[in-house]
Length: 299
Length: 309
Image (cartoon, rainbow over all chains, first blue to last red; front, side, top):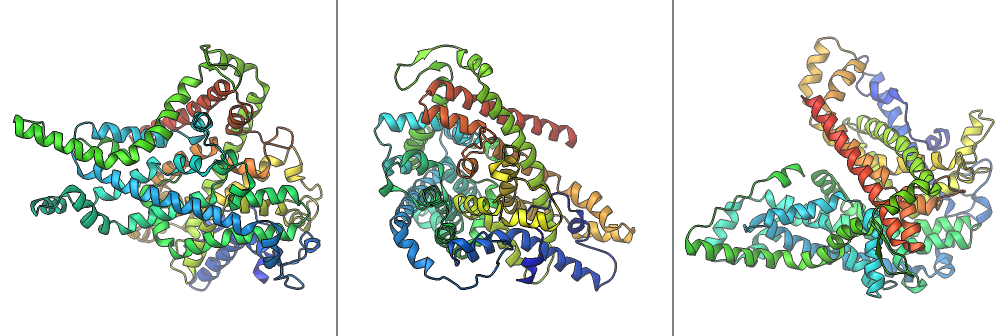
């Protein structure tokens, strides 16, 4: 906590050569760990201060949040905030809606994405590579450039303000196909060839051999999709207008608009919305980072 | 990604009727795998992408039927002050976000590359802002930037800054506040890419440099940075694309305000197209956005090629 109190303001370190140059100093064996830990503490402060502040504010009274000087530890821990927030806004409904969308979209993406990736990676037929280029090309087009045509389509189909719009737009992304195909390409073709000799159909090879081998890639894709959908703001913001359909992100945002002075309650809501993501992230961190490192892209 | 595209089709040319039958069978099987995804992909991504290009040349709003108007939307853009402001703000955001995030990510990666106890925790912590929901990030930073009692200004006051910025309530300081928030959010992601790059540099390089008496700065400048060139290039491309299409953070944090001080191009597309229903004009703005992103990326690729030669 003392580190937090004396740490510089949470601004990024744009012009800070010291951690760069001193990361592997030559000189004394005693200075080196000191410098390293000093830079670690600076980094930790920069990264963590907003989280610490969020957590501490969520346990205060509204009028204790923005005080001079800052109170890093609440005078009295108001755990009751975490009880009250469920009555203040329909938090349970929002969380349920977010979970429903995230789980549905993740399942569809995993199923159709891994299935299509097998066609692209392990079955040879004319036109396959041209088709794959079409998939890749759309990844390069920013979503912002085609959100209007998507919106027109959904409006004409009268699917706005339903979950269908979000599910249909997000469940068949090219990204999942791309990620899974990259992984399938690393599985030797001889394995499939041998299975074919044994009389297994292509669907059998996919189901019995490729799918069990690709658990890490499936985990990566599942985590990335789940977190992306859970955190998505613009999609629900554009398509979901009725309050009973809102996701937790829309719920928190509207809370800020309605009760601007309820600082502590807003922070409590924010903490509640982040906890599921923290749990998912900590459980599957390895796959998460792997997914980013192997594909080099997200969203 | 590059090798995925250039990978040559390995299918043998069909010879004889048995061969033909096999090709047809494979085509059927291949399509049966791809189809469930392709139907959704074609309808909800491919068609809208193609439509986006066509719409830019139409006059179409919620009341009137579409009409072909050629380049009218683009000439209208030249006179639209909102467009000029949004373009300027997008460039401003990119000019701040790209270099600051790059330097912060590299610094983080170098600090967290060592084999120190507890480094795993710090890496996780540094990456977590990127995974945290944007709404939570925006809500927290809005309070941190509170002009009178926010921690940021309290710190600035403590170090002796007398003329405290108004941050999100000031037209001059709203964009810097957004930039700082986005740097904080994104640096962990690019740190992961830099960490991978750092770990691929052979340790012998540093040993040899030490033998020659190179100090830490020299080792950084002559070994680390040149070896990280491919990573830096990739990070630069990703950052550029990400910066130019920024939307959600601004929508949640400022909604483009105060005034038009943080109005960016994607937000203009959203306002014109989805709020106002000017489908044609908004698609023209979106096309400009896409062309900017594409040309910056192409220029970066060209420069990279030339330097590699």
